[in-house]
Length: 305
Image 1 (cartoon, rainbow, N blue to C red):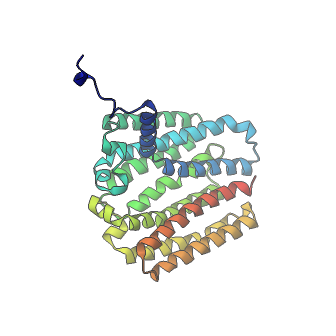
Image 2 (cartoon, rainbow, N blue to C red):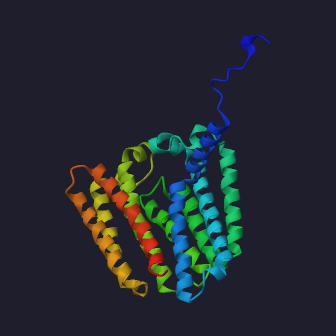
Image 3 (tube, helix red, strand yellow):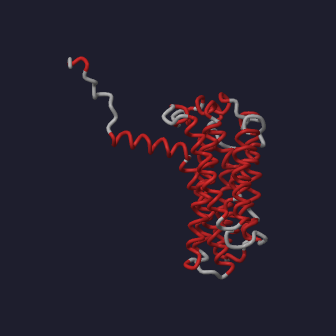
């Protein structure tokens, strides 16, 4: 064989590099950060249900695995289908242009199949827990995939409200795997997550306003401007203030700490009316919101441990 016919190895990807790229693509496809953040409330809901019904985690560890893995698969399926449907938007936006659906590293047909299979497996596992947990899982999945991604995201500013519903049902999935949701605790957990997601998402939309505008996504800052969005952020954060007081069963320490966190977030939010750098302020609101919800739901577990 002529040396000119020998394939060059300079452009070949080593197995290690290929595996690294695949892992990176899968993390992007699954929106690993978002997925992880949604698993925590499922766990908190499950844990609190055990606590308030006087049941032992050891006796229900198999049910726990079914609940966590099932709900994670359902949420992963929804996130994958979101990536599949939003490939045109992701192509335009800077922060999403490297997703495997855009680069073509994972074909769209494969992405669609992955989303469907993950969803089906997830629901089968949830059905092995309780019907009520499965129903809440379906509400979250359907709301996110159809009502948010396919219907409202590109058309209406209230897409954020719809998207918040899908994220807020997560503790209900965990709770109802053990006990009926007709209890003040899971209802308040739902409300906390629902309200939290509004200012959290508004902050992201402000940070990426130009990208959302270029992609034609009807986020509030794009359609109504920053001034209106700042008011909305303050209003929703203020709505969080009374919610911890409905969780007196979690103890005084929880109520005090949760209230301090709420007041701190409200102070940061009000600071938006006086800032000279809207994007920097929006980033601070975003960081506060992420830490707020993580600490709050971990705290619920700690005070009942």
